[in-house]
Image 1 (spheres, helix red, strand yellow):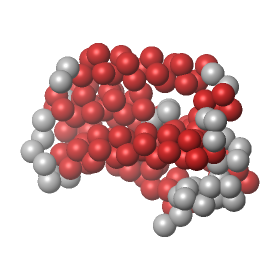
Image 2 (cartoon, rainbow, N blue to C red):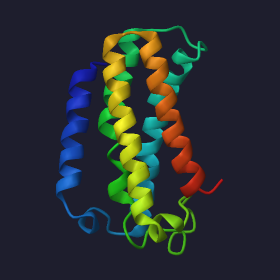
Image 3 (cartoon, helix red, strand yellow):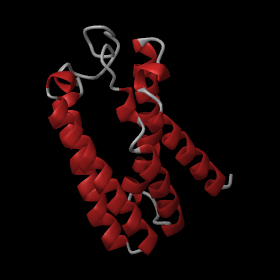
Length: 155
C-alpha cells in the first residue's frame, strides 16, 4: 500500500473536520464516541509499532517509523473535534471518557495541545532516522498520552 496518498487523504479529512461545526458532524452523541474511539484505535496501531521499535521489541525500520509518525501527525488532531457536548458518560454510558473532560475543558484542551506538540516533534525525529532522537520523542509522546488517559479516561 502506498502511504503518501493515504496520508494526503487523512490530511484532507482533518482539514475538513476542523472547518465544519462539530455538531454538524455527529447526528447522535454515540457517533461522536465511535469516531473518537476509531481514530484512537488507528493511532494506537501506529504508535504501538513505533514504541515497539524504540523499545527493541520489533526490529528497527527507519522508513516504517517515519511513515507511522507522519500518519500520527495527522490523526493526532482528529479525536478532539468529537468531544462535543452531550457525548460524555452522562449521555453515552459506553464511552471511556470521564465527565472531567467537560468539567475541566481548558485543562483537557491543554493536555491535547501538549500531545499534538509532542507528536509533531516525534514526526521530526522520525524523519531524521536517528533512533536516539526517536526514543526521546517517543518518551515524550508516551508521557503525554498517559497523563491525558490517567486524568480523562475510565480505566
